[in-house]
Length: 369
DNA sequence: GCCTTCTTTTCCTTAGTCTC
DNA sequence: GAGACTAAGGAAAAGAAGGC
Image (tube, rainbow, N blue to C red; front, side, top):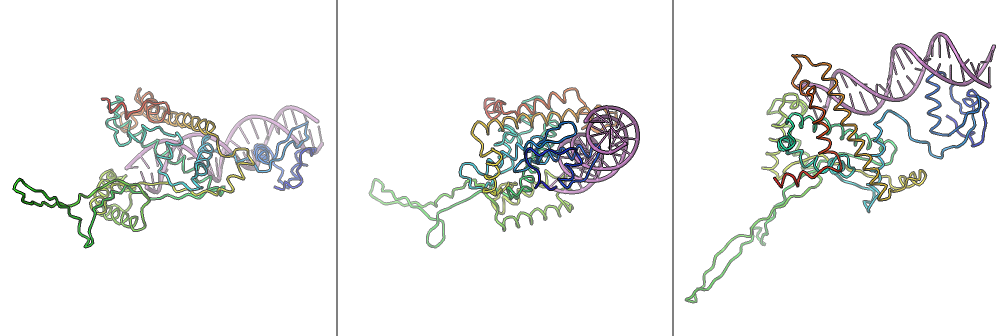
């Protein structure tokens, strides 16, 4: 498309004339509609009969309109805001759940109850299977939403992002002397006969948890342990452990070996995001969307929270309806559960507790009982 | 975790109708 | 009468969910 001759106020007698000036193909029907819609990313126009009158030309074209989830642009905006705000200096290292929580895609109950699913199920009077399914489907959906936003920002050359293996590492420390032995302490006492007695003990080692990016050697070691356990279970790929229903066993065993041999309590994925800060500012100035104000940021997060709830509930409704359609005596257990009359209300209850920003704190509720 | 399947959206052609 | 508009139907692409 050649926009060099398009100026505000220009009048073109008809569609064909406009095509000529833009060096665009003449199209018809819905293809033409799509073409006009595409042009509206670059300039605004008014119609007068067949005439096209140019009323505005955008310095930066509006974003492409494709069939992305409607709230992905909000996630993009909040991620960009996050990397440039508060002296982050255009760099962010953050776990998936931390990022989702900051953006209000989940609330604090979500991560808290993720590893307490049986307790959550009993507390809410919902079956464990339903809670498991909720986490399985929403985890995947939210991860894809985040990564769609990251990929879109990467495509616009606004950020570069990578996955980064992160460790919960148990640091241990014991004070040593010059000969590298654990430092000893002595306690001297004088008894009633003025005799000296001495007792010895060693400095007690201390331990504490730290979270940090894994080193190259640690990544290699983790891969090696994963491979060994895969071999033990006769699986070629991690996905095979899911297929064989061995995934919980697999991860438990890997974790145990890593803890026993390397003080690694567990490992998970984080995002490392590096921003093209200079360009972000120039783009935002252009679009009058410079770094978000405090209340604006909150508004975006609250809208996102609402949209995510809506999406998860909508997906549950679809699953429920589809299950009812396909239900018969031989249907698998999952379909029977989904077609259950309580399935939807339970799903809504779960989004209300685990996603809704206004939910009561489960941490408090669990501690009281 | 990852591959497969389903769903939604976009884009296209064709053909008939409407408007300038 | 030429150009513009509209609807139906289908292919392709991309997103989202399913399933082990």
